[in-house]
Length: 190
Image 1 (cartoon, rainbow, N blue to C red):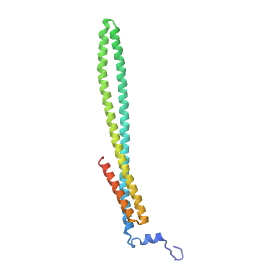
Image 2 (cartoon, rainbow, N blue to C red):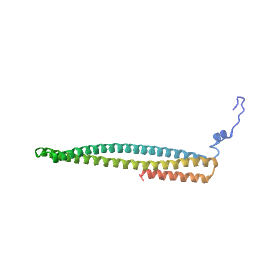
Image 3 (cartoon, one colour):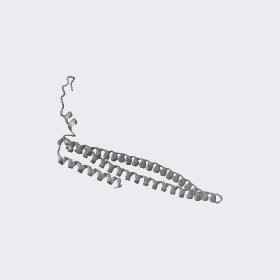
Image 4 (cartoon, helix red, strand yellow):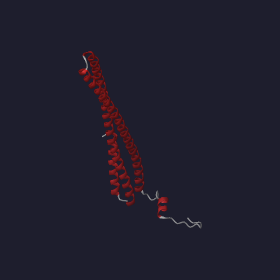
């Protein structure tokens, strides 16, 4: 609009000002569908990020347990070395000292059994965390696939709006449906 009272409408201004009067339901439906798809996509994206974080936390916990198990196995090995030295002492010592060294052998044998149990328990915990991490990563991939399908649907919706091709609108619905199915699979932990 100029300062002299002369007003010129561009094509976009006309569409914006008179869009609701033109009866363009196609554009309105695409706009609503795009808004819904964006909302669903945001939810899928959040869930995908959350499962990825869970996977990393579980992987970290597995590494910690694996390190603790390695420490226990090192401790087990140290006790084995002491037991071997005590057994050697039994065979090389005079009869008067053999009983003392034999007690040491038995003590180290009992200590090793406890240490071995602890190490095996830590290894099992590490494997359980590894499995949880793998499961969470699988879910993350499923959420990412769902989000990709939703993004494709949003892109197809924009193209169908620009080209006014109804068949593209159907393709949009198919991509959106695929995204929802994949999101449902992720939600069901499949």
